[in-house]
Amino acid sequence: MLIAYVTRHGSTASIAEKIGEVLTGQGLFVDVRPVERIEEADLAQYDYYVVGSGPIWAKAMPPFLKFVKDYLGVFTSKPTAIFNVCMTVQRETPANMKRAADYLEASVKHVPELKPVVEKAMFGGRVSMEKLSIWESMVLRFFFIITPQTHGDFRKWDEVTAWAEKVGDAFKAA
Image 1 (spheres, one colour):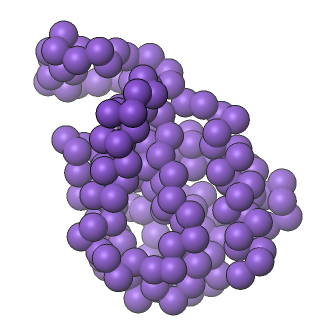
Image 2: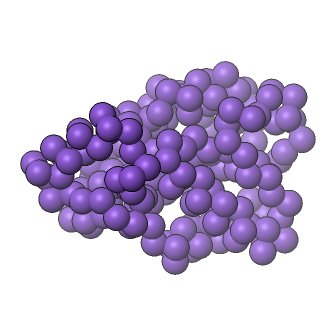
């Protein structure tokens, strides 16, 4: 199984690694790699895929979309799970959860052929102001003034673990 991800500041990478740990614990062979280090020839050796990214300005990150589009034939022929890491879910209001779900759908709407998707999930991420560029920091500080969002670590490892177990069970049953 391949877990492929796009990360900007490491939050998605840490969640991908945790998913990999859980699936390995279920007895599955797992590779966890950023999409930049994956070639088409690499993909043929896997029977299952988990792909993840975080949104940027309410859309999937361009490297994620390019990766999925470039290898769409591979992902449509084998079971695939998708996850999204989004700061919007830090406050679990109905409006925020809908917005985050919309981000997740936006991650795949440009590739509607991406099937069979066995599971989709969205997780909270982590924003460390010291890891951001000056521009990103300024934009986020303004964003935090006009919304109830804030920086911090909003990853819920129990939710990541539960989803990964569900994905592992679905893959084993496929």
